[in-house]
Image 1 (cartoon, rainbow, N blue to C red):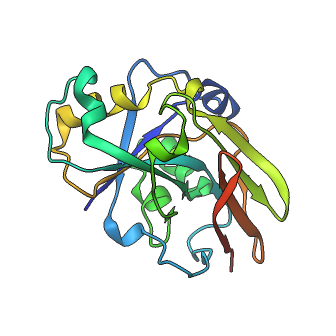
Image 2 (cartoon, protein in one colour):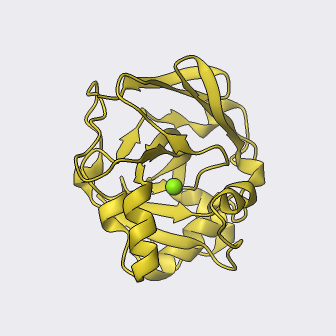
Length: 204
Ligand code: MG
């Protein structure tokens, strides 16, 4: 199983980090060891002093596919969940400055927190209009809607499947809306899909 992540897929988030709006999706990977184990807290890793939260809609692939056309992409998933793409922003800034890959900032153990998954049919919303938000200690810090994606899910699947064969169980983190910020020990993170709290955990 692999985790494919999209960066800068919401214009307001690209702007808040002083990044240009991309002309094609920004793609990176996390290994399966990045998955935060169920019912475990997120431990701030020793190699960073500035871990940021990025709430993202996560799409689960349900068929093998490669070179998928956008018009057929919807046949390759039927469930979504939410995740946090934890990012060591200080390490990432250093990697960017030196022109190095991002893995140390993005792919460390526990950096992919993922909720359980829900059938899209049962959400009664199309994939292009799904609302989600993140509360920290009871206050909403990020909220997004998939209608604001620069590259919608079906285009993302078409794009990434040009490079990587998609396999059943692969996950795609589809990018974060604006409002990213630092997490601290003892924070409580609560993730909401539409208005339902579907996942929560603490930072340690
Ligand atoms: Mg992200």
